[in-house]
Each structure stands twice: as C-alpha cells, then as structure tokens.
Length: 251
Image (tube, rainbow, N blue to C red; front, side, top):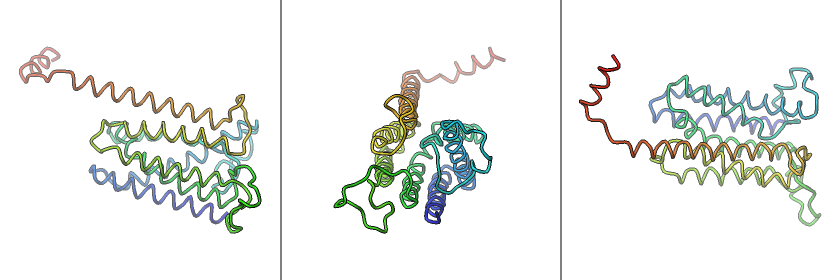
C-alpha cells in the first residue's frame, strides 16, 4: 500500500512539474498547473471509484470509500471523463483555447499514467493471467506469477508520450491532444484483453467501451481543429479599411 501511494504522489508531482514548465513558457503562473493537476487527480480518483460502484450496483456505499487513495476496486479509464471536463473548464477560466491547454497536458498526463501503473503493479492489482512457472517474475515483483499487465500499460504510456513529443510545437493546436486520446484509448483497448476483468458489454469490458469513446473523442477533436485551421488559412486577410467599415456598420 505504501508503494502504491508513493508512486501516485510521484505521478502527481511529475505531472505538476512538467505542466508548470509548459505554463511558464507561455507566461502563465506555474501555480495554476499544480492546482489543475490536484483537481484532476482527486476528481479522477473519485470518478473511478464511483463508476465501479455503479457497475456493481452499490453506489450508496460509505462516501469515504470514494476518496480512498489506496489500492482498491475502481473502473479503469473512468477517471479520464471528468479530467477532460475539468481541463476544458480550466481553459475557459484562464481564457486560453481549450485545444492549447489539452496539448500542454497531454505529455504530463502520459507521465502520470506511466508512474501510476508501476504503483498498481507493486500493489498487486490490475493483474494479467497466470504465467507458466518458468516465466514467473522475480519474487520481489508482486504478483510474480501473473503477467505484469500494469507494466505493459506503463510501457504503452511511455511510448505514447514519445510519439506526442515527436509532434512539433508549431503543429495545429489540438493535434497533440487528439493524438493522446487516440493512442492512449487504442492502447488501453488492446491491453485490456490481457487484463482480468468482467465483460459487461458483450465481449467487451467497461474499460474497452470507454477506450472506444476516447478514440472517437480524439478523432473528432482532430477533425475539428484541422478543419478550422484549414478554413482560417483559406480565408483572405481583411484590408484595414474593410474592417473599419464593418465596425462602423455594427456600431
């Protein structure tokens, strides 16, 4: 339990530090990055616990269980849902385009996910199927007899972060964020096949259904931002006299 909580604290600290650096480069206070990460961290944990309680038809359990930060039952990927809404609301409060803030948060989000998955592995949760005895991990890596699904998810998050960093900063705002949603959602969908979990939606688990929604969100965001950028490039620049004439008519 100690390792689980320690790794999640480190995940929060790393994401806050990376996001604060990006904020300062854009002239935004770094404190806002820490505050945003703290809100997302708490809201995503609550959402993951609450969504699992809905799945097992026990939503009225003691409210303290929703704010337990130790290892325990949760609905994987459900924490991403409130995180998207919170980042969008925070962008509105800071008066910056939501696509820009999503871009800034994409890589720190991958880093937080990667570190957090190591904590899940050390806590012995989110395991994969049993391994043959000759393939067992060292005994100090608990659970040593199961496929280390969280470590594979950690590797996938690192790979997604690397691919996102390959996107130049000059790219259309929102492209990096859409890449995060598509790549992370696709990785979680495929890795869920080697995770223990109940198939609540036909052959799919709830995590896989949410993963498909995440991929669809990323695809829609990419279509929206690239179409808007193309339209902006195709529009002719206003002559100063035309702009003044329109302003007088509106007045």
